[in-house]
Length: 349
Image (tube, rainbow, N blue to C red):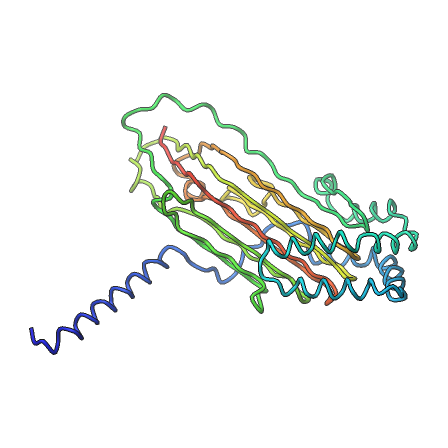
């Protein structure tokens, strides 16, 4: 080969290889143009009803805060606005805990002076929700509250003795990731779905911050592309799906004055957009002022047995969801939901 052509040819091959590597790294992870309509705790209608219920309380508290001459209200506003600028979730939570400790006595005094009938307004807020959600509502102070929970999938029968003809697959070997976001202006919503690379698990990390008026949502999914009969012999056997996973959800609704709320959720059920069906969903609500936090971490081993024709269940791993809503410029919310799917076994029986 002409020596003058060797270097250009080498560079072309190397560049082409890099392009292929980049394409391969992205292969299997796609972005949705639109998020599905998941069943969550708070709709636009309920949001408006919450605002209307607490309107008299908000007016009293806002008047007392405005008239306060101690300087605490202004200092609290400044502290909250600085928190909005922090990118790290861990640092943000540490700062919020400090703010909560520092300013709690001040807000407690304001609330006592407002002489609010907490029981009356708690019942009014509860009545806005269906019975199954109402039962999960837990109030803290200042009418702030959390709600949510989940349902356990029924345990399948014990597996039969292993048969040599039965095939088992690792779902991670057929990895496919999907993610979606909306309302994510100025980087307020982030979702990352990562391919399994043993011994690392397949992971989803989703976060949303509502620092301005609006709702911000993000969701990620881990699936596989195993198919029937390509990967399993064509017969009437069932498939036992075993997943080992971790989930961590944290949410914070905090307000200078006005409604904010946040939701975190996960699900291992591919046939439903209701997180209560095969998952868990939690929301925090600060309808008037101050801070309402939530945090939960769990590790689970889950088994289900499905028909080989139920491809949606066979191919579905896990999903993580976040939503943050701020109704006023003087309120803020953030949410973070992360899933780590460590083991994913699909076995005939």
